[in-house]
Amino acid sequence: MAIYLQTIANGLMLGALYACLAVGFSLVWGVLNVINMLHGSFIILGGYLTYFAWHYYGIHPIVMLPVVALLMFALGFVLQRGAINRVVSAPVLTTLTLTFGLDMILYNLMTYWFTATPRRITLDLGAANLGPVVLPVDRLLGTGLALLLTFLLYAVMRGSNIGRAIVAVRMDRTAAELMGIRTDRIYAITFGIGTLMAGAAGVVFALVFPITTNVSGTWLGKAFVVCVVGGLGSVPGALVGGLVLGLVESFAGFWFGPQNAITAGFVLMLVLLLTRPTGLMGVKGYE
Amino acid sequence: MKPLAQYAAIIVGLVLLGTTPLYADNYILRTAATVAMYGALATSWNFIGGFTGYPSFSTAAFFGLGAYVGTICQRNGIPMGVAWTIATVSVAAFAALLGGIILRLRGHYFAIGSIAIVELCRLIVSSWSDLTGGGDGLNVPLIHASPDAVTRLFLFVMLGILAASLVVTIIVDRSRLGFGLRCIHQNEDAAAMVGINTTAYKIAAYTLSAVFCATVGAAYASWTGYIDPTDSFQIVMTVKVAVMAILGGAGTVVGPALGAAAFVLLEEVFWANFIDWNRAILGVVIVLLIFFLPGGLLSLRARLRRASGGAA
Image (cartoon, rainbow over all chains, first blue to last red):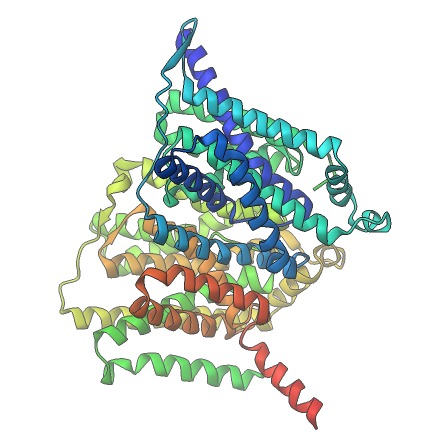
């Protein structure tokens, strides 16, 4: 019994991280209709910024979080305005290829500057016990931060004018334009927010996982799965998708061995793609 | 491009690559074989990505599966040529089955699904270590001949596959199938409405896009003598092949092979001179291509003609 509780706890902690990782990707896909292949590298970049600030200047990751968020937003805004906006209404082959090309550049720059050595922030916070379940405190902190960030994005999307404008553009671009929303700016802001969330997820991940450019593809793959499982473009969708994927990987790792955990995630995704392409939380006709 | 110009371009290209053994060293021969190999891959991708307009990124899955099936056959004593044939036929059957399932998806979902196939193949091959050797990879029985003879052999093998894929492209281009695929590209619902069996046509295109990739994969494995999951199933390769086809001109007969040649030559130059920045430079090439040459190299002719027409 205890082992099942532990597996569930691990799955939920992992799931919260996945939700935070994927929510920006989902937003960009849902609003701009762009599959952003840069997302994995954005996460790594956020992680590296945090690691080097901590390693060289002793800045605590939580202090770095708003700084990284701001920098990443600026990067995303500029990239969308300067590059992605030129092809934003082109077919998926074009937009995916472009973001892949940009990703190759960013990946190469990061590998050159930071080398591919895995780096991790170790805060040595020990572990907490909850009945028979052991919860490492750094991971718990990561989970808490991930949930907080995801909730913040939800609040912004629901409560602010910018958030409502983004939702309006997602629902009907032409109608939004007629209401006086400048869609070009909303696209750039949305991509900025997507990049910001990736960077913030990177800060959180640096506390829990080793950071290296080699894993950017793995994180990108998680974003794919979470989006398809939860449905596109909504924060609750990403949260559900993330938690489901976390639990599936946790149990698949427990039953079939850790090397098959990722496989289970992809199989889940393919099955859902074919049976419920709008995702578990998706609305029909909304894709 | 007129049929005669197509034939001429293909023959000139094949002769240029095929005559390299007469004068060039091993390095040039290897490059020529690589050009032919990527030419065959890009020409294959063109069936589904170019004619049909489906953003398929599963090339690396077919290549990798072909490499593994061929290698496993060869390790069990099956002669090389037979092993390649088995790889080709079995991967084609797999693609037809898979196509029946994932071609129900469209647009972004199809793109994501087809990328996931590559990852899934890599993960399954990695964890099925009894059969595939897992992450350690597999050695392929070596060919006992001089390095020059081996390179020459694989140059001609790759050229043969490239020629076959081009011949099939020409046949498809002029047939009902090619016409139907173009209709699907323009408007799938309308194509279905006028009586095109879209499912069957799409499966045919997807299977054609897999056949030669599998042969290339199996031959490549025999050439290098060693395969492992990371090298056999690369997302980078899958996108690279699509980029080559776009670079030359997606949906045209000779464009993808031309794009492959240009891309491989660029890549060789970058590898030789900027080893640290290889990936970034290729990224820049992709970005420039998407911005300034979305119709590919072959669209340049039309552009030039329009420019000169405007001047006159």
